[in-house]
Structures are given as structure tokens and as C-alpha cells.
Length: 420
Image (cartoon, rainbow, N blue to C red; front, side):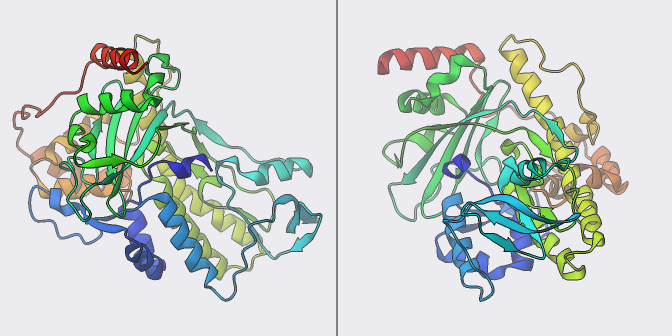
């Protein structure tokens, strides 16, 4: 699982879900060194919303604590050395799985949690069943990530969190963001277009550090007197946005990335996966596993919970990609933009009003942390009305400006030459 070695975010939706369904898991994370962060510290006034809490935690720590909690359940058996190779079928329903040793394992219900590869598609095709119709939209993102640790245990973040739970920004031709994690650890991730060969040298630690040094808000996060690297710069190509079609057979469900993948830049994946899993479990409690009604309810859940975020992500990915391609003097990747769930000028007005109005800030932040979708937020007529009533104020001068594309490439080239 290559993404496990990269930065992850458990946003406010994820924390809300764990508080409701698995408080013991959340307690375990805190005991393992994860930290809660109240996003209201960045509000432009008083905001009475206890849901606006996020967690600082690495994926490795989350996986370890989750494994401990699941292993402690008396009805759970975990087999790390067993691989599933095919589905066990009984007429028109799934009746279990077959392992790599040839052993059949009967089951009332099979849940595919195999991630974005969605292994059940391969198993269904091998059995002669259609895999179902999927929706997809490119993310066009390559990420360079590195973890660091504070030299002073228990110290404060090296710099301000100008993005609520992060520092840095998604700029006009690249991204550069630092996310605090557990146990005095944090991660910095730089994002570029996957075909942008001029930025491939970011995999070199010296080049990576130099670019962090000229990126807004990130210089203190790579100050060697305050932090130390924990490993190499790791590179990963990000997956496309995906919304899987419903399973064609009774007795088979998909969860998490096997059901939906959204652009990792927006930090929704973990929280959506947890929420989808627990709500799917609620459906299983209400419907017999062999019932057609369970499959229909699972499809309805996908439409309600996952489809809006898939549609939001393909739009947000498209906007970012076209900006970055234009900055790199590349032709548009697509001449057919996806329909935005919210008019871009209205969302821009809300983002601007959020800087001074606490009510608008609360709504925008709830949308940014997946507690509500932008479409639902603006469906309440009181919200856009509030946005329009916020007095227009001149935009404050930016404290710092990101490097131009030319300045970025000059820094990469000069540092790579020096390092080489």
C-alpha cells in the first residue's frame, strides 16, 4: 500500500464518525500520541460548533491502533497470510471466497475492502459477471512527501497553521503543505503535475528542502535547528477520482476506496472511508445479508454519501489541473469542464466573506472538512443571503507570495546542480 508512507488527514467528518461509532478507537489514537485540534482557533469570531475538530495522526499509527482495536473484538479473526483469489458463488449470489490455498470460506456476506484496485471486479469478471459501470475523472497529481520530527519534544509547531489544520497552500502552479501529525512528527508534501519532468528533481532531499524554503509559510518547517528529517523524500502518483458501480450480485458489498476514490489533495479519503464503513454496518444490522434490499440500500448510501464528493472532487481536480497546465504553458487537459456543484463565483464570495464573518466561516469550514457538501451548504437560502450581506472589504496584502513558475524551476535547477 504505497500511500501508507505518505501524509494523511483525518478531518472533522472522520472525528465526528469516530466519536459516534468508535470512541475507543479515538481514545486509543490519543493514547498513542495523536492530537486533537480545534479548528475554531482560526475563526474570525465566536463559533459554537463542537464538530469542528480534527486529528493530527500518521497513517501508520492509525493503522496500528485500528488493528489493535479490531483484534480485541471477540468475534473477529484476522489472517495476515491469507489471500483471496476468487469468489465462492451460489447461483446468483456470493456465498463466500476462495483463498490462495484453494480453501473455500463460506460467508453470508463478503465485503471488498481491497482499496482502489477493487479486487472484486477481477473476481466477478473471472466468474463471467459484469463488473458494473464505474465513473472516473483524472486527478493529475504527483506528490513528493517527507516526514520530520521536532528536535524539541512537546514543542509548538515550527510555524503558524494558516490553513486551519495545515501550513502552506495550493498555489497557481504547484502545492506545498505541511500537516502536523502525532508524537512531534509532521509531514510536508509538494504537489506537481505528473508529466512535469522539470520538477522530478524534487525527489532529491536538497532540492525538496530548497523549494520548501521559498514556499510561503514553510521555511520554518525545514529549519534544521528546529526539525530533523525522518526519512527520504517519497514520490507517488495519485489515483484518479473513481465512483464504483453497485455490485451486480447479492452478498457482495464494497467499502472505502473500493467504492469511491477522491483526489487525495483534498484530504477526504480516510474520513469518507470510516463514515461509509460504519453506515454500511448500520445497513447490515437492518437487513439480512442475503436480501436484495441490502444491496439496494448500499447503492442508495453510495448515492447519498459518496457521489456528491466524487462530483465535487472531479470539479476541484479539473480547476487545479487547468491552472497548473496553463502555468506550465501546456494545452488544456480537457475542454469539457465538469459542472460545478456550486457556482464558482458564489463559492469564491463565500471564501472571501469567511475571513470576517464567523457564520460564513463556520459554513465554509464545515464544507471544507466534509461535514456537509458545498451543494447542501448553499441549498439553505439563508447561507447565500448571508454571504451577500457581508460588506466587501479590500483584500489584505498577502504576507508572502509563492514563487513564480520560473523562480521555482530556477531554484530546482540551481540546487540540483549544486547537490550533484
